[in-house]
Image 1 (cartoon, helix red, strand yellow):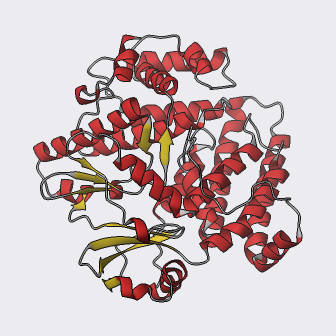
Image 2 (tube, rainbow, N blue to C red; image 1 turned 135 degrees about the horizontal axis):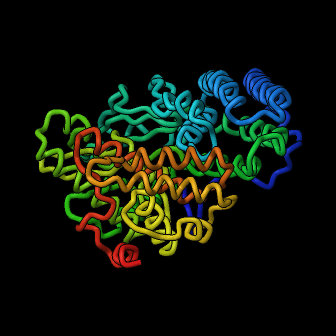
Length: 450
C-alpha cells in the first residue's frame, strides 16, 4: 500500500478497461469454477443478511444483536472457505480485510486471520519457469547454486537462498506462477461483485471504491519493480543506528523477481525467545524508535511489521525486509493521526471529534463522539489501568465500524503498524512508548506541543 505517493507505480493492468469485453469473457470462462464458487458464496451471504434485515426490522438493538452476531460468524466461515479455496487474489483479500476492523465485524477478522500466514509451498521446478521468463534461458549461469527448499513462502511469492557466480550469497524472491493470470480472472469478478453489492451493504462504505483500492494495491504488489523502488528509497533514508535495509542486486531485479543480499541473522522472534529480558528490551526499543522515526520524520514506513520481516545479526543490528507494502504520510497527517492516538491512549486532552473530522474521518455524529469521549475517560485510569495500544486500536476501530464511520486509509495503515508493534512488545513485556526520546523529530515535538 502506498499513500500520497507521487512516484510512478508499475502495473500491467488497465483499470479503465471496459468491464465487459471478449478478453475478459474468455478469462472468466477459463476460471469458471473459481468464478462460480465466488459468486454463489457472495450471493448466499448477501441473501442471508437481506432476510435477517427484513425479519428484524423495527427491533431494538439488544434484541437483534445476538442474531447478527451468530450470522456474522457463520458467514465469516463461508468467506474464509472461499478465500482458502480460490487462493491468489482471494487470499490477498482475506489478508487485507483481516486488518480492517473498521469495515468488518470482529467475527470476520478472527475467521480470516489464519490466512495472514498463508504458506503453501510451491515446488521449485514450477518457479524455474518464472526464472527463465525473467532472466533468460541461461538463468542458471548467473548462480553458483540455488537452494530449492524455500526459506519463506507467502500468498504470491516464495524466497530461496542462492549464491551468485561472484560468490555473493543472496535471497531470491520469486513470484509464484499463474498468480498474474489468476488475478486477471479475479480482477473482473471482484468488479462484478462490487457492482452487485453496491447499495446492498449497511453503513457508508463505498464498495466499488473499496474494491478498486484493493485491486490497485494487489496489482502494485504483483509488479516487483514497485517493491524494488520502495527498497531503494527506504535504504536511502538516514536511519537510526543499528537499523539496516538489505541491498538489492539491481541487474537481477525484474517484474517478478527481486534479488537482495543474504542476511546472516535470525528472525527477531527466534532471537528474543533465546535472549534475556535486557536484550529483548534493547532490540525492541531500537525497533520502536525506528518506526517512530519512519512515521514522524520520514513520513514513509514499512507497513507490514510481521515478526518474520525483522532479522537480527550477531552484532545486534536489525534488518527490516519486505517493502511490498509501504505507508506514506504528509506532515499534516502525521501530526493529526499522532494526536488522535495520543488522545485515545489518554495522554492528551483535545476535541477529538473536531480533530477526526479535520483528519478525513466521515460519518461522525454526536453519539460517536460521546462513545470516544467515554473511552478516553476509561483509558485515563492511572498506573493501575494498563491499556495496550493494540487493545485501543482494536476497540476503537470496531466501534467506528459499528457506527459506520469511514476511516481514512492512511490512518488504518498507521494504526495497524502501531497496534501490531505494540502487541508484539507487550508479548515480551517491553513497555511501548508512543513518543520515545530517540525519535523526537520536529514533527513529533510539534504534536506533543499541540
